[in-house]
Length: 94
Image (cartoon, rainbow, N blue to C red):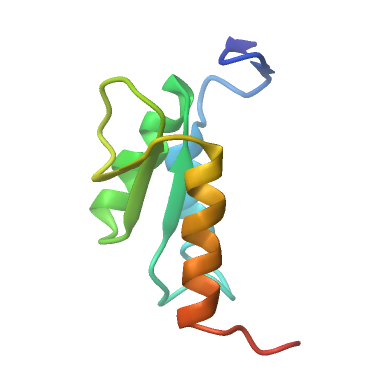
């Protein structure tokens, strides 16, 4: 069990969010795509590092030191950013 912001994460000692991202990025539909990862917790730092290594977008939500390349102030800023993304790049229905 690993502590986080208002949560406890259950995970093996041999895997973290960075390893999970690397595994996801090797399979369809994620392979050959650009990863985008947002997080607000210490346990997200491995994910930021993995996304950076893969040339993606690592986004820290909130304050604090981070390995993320970008930052959004809070969840309201995340929502506004996502709305802007959808307006610029509409998603076709499946």
